[in-house]
Image 1 (tube, rainbow over the protein chains, first blue to last red):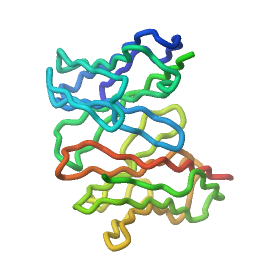
Image 2 (image 1 turned 120 degrees about the vertical axis):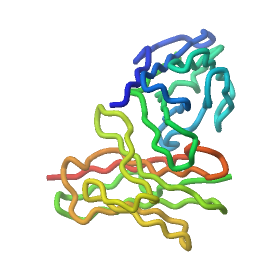
Image 3 (image 1 turned 180 degrees about the vertical axis):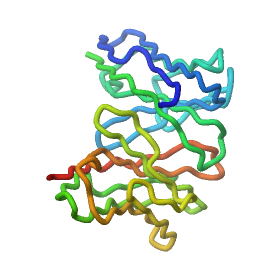
Image 4 (image 1 turned 60 degrees about the horizontal axis):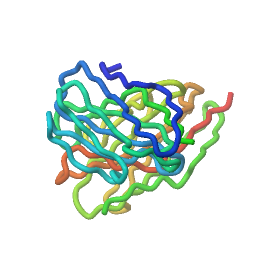
Length: 114
Length: 110
C-alpha cells in the first residue's frame, strides 16, 4: 500500500458537532483528494488539493471544508455534522494531475452522525 | 456534466464462468477510463485503465467510443475475484479528478 493513512478510522458523533478527518501521506505526492462513498453513488469527490494552500471544490462540497498547510497532510472538516454526512470517507493521492494518472487510496474513515 | 453508469449492482457467477461488468459513460470529449477494485477489508486500488490496454488478473476492458462503454470482462471467474468494482472516468480538460459509477459487487460462488 502507498504510504497513506487516515485518522480516525471510525468515528461516531452527534448532529451539529464539528468533525475533522485527517489524511497523511509519506509519498510526497502533490495532489490529494477527498471522496465519500455511499451505496448506489460510488465515490464522489468532495474537495481536492493541487498543493500546499491550493484547494478547490469537488462535486459534493457543501457542508465540507478542507485545509492543506503541509504537503503530507490534507484535512477534511465538517463544520456542523448532519446525518446526511454519515458515510465512508476516502483520501487519495496522485503524483501528477495528468488525466489518467493512478490515484492511490487510503484505508477510509467510517463516520456515523447520530 | 460527465456521468458513469454501472447498471448492475450485483453480479453472481459460478467459479469458472465468464463475467462481464458493464460500464457506460456520458461525456462528449476524450475521457480516460479506469476500473478500480475493492476487495474485502482492502483499499480501493486500480485494476486497469484503457490507455494501458493491458490485462490484469485476467481482466480486460475495451473502450468503445461509439457505444460510450468500457465493459470489464474475464473469461473464467475465480473466487478471489469477489469484490466491489468501480468504473471511473477522468476528463483530460479537468486534470485527474475522477467521476465514479455506482459500483458492481461481484460474488463468485464455488
